[in-house]
Image (cartoon, rainbow over all chains, first blue to last red; front, side):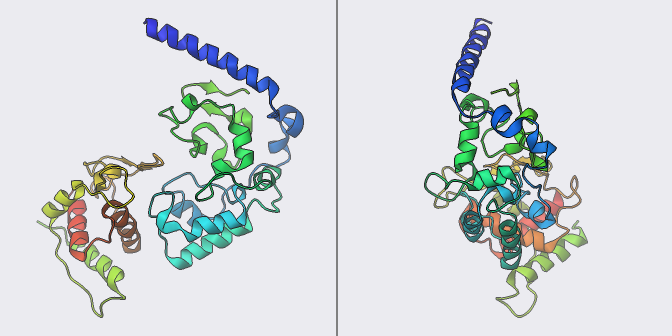
Length: 189
Length: 124
């Protein structure tokens, strides 16, 4: 019982800490981007519109929209499917080429979506294969989210599980208003 | 008593998998008991961070839903009795044998191993 109370108290302290950080950073959806802007103007990420992609890639993980990575990153991903983040995701070469064409055409570079262009704006940080979670834009948008809500949250497990918290992720809608973290509720930054 | 479709699928699968290597159809009779043993046999292929088996993702029970080891995405049950869509598409079967044998064992499965797995899955 005492443990639970202490846990809740720590969580509250942590939340206060987070608010403190939030006041000082640049992640201000309301001012800079317009809280309703992404959806109202249709400027969020274009949803997946390729059934093969949905089946082949979405079979094992969230089907990340093409507009989340630049074309060279997609080429790297599709050229190394035999070691796909530690898994063997080998595809028939013709199918893989078709998917790469789809990904390249809708990639973040030169995309009509403002958010996609934000993903393309900076090089991907870190070593190894390109990861959406290592784009500067992704990192800036998630730097206030504590690990206990994601990596250490058994209902989420990883920042790669977009749809675990972003209820609009399947539709390419990453508006913060649609974020609900399992076990923690609505996310406000 | 063996379900006739099991043999047909095993044959189809092996043809599609070996079409470049052999001229004619290859017939392999599956051994469900051997497939069951291999299902939970653990392997440590290069790059693995712990023992791997079919059960790592699919669980030891073919009638249960599994979970992708990395992404946590749910995997529908393998047993044909609870998931009739299983083993209906030879190309799909061959694709997943390729990926999953290499991830789990660090090599391709032999035609006999595949036939054994198919018989085991059909029998569940």
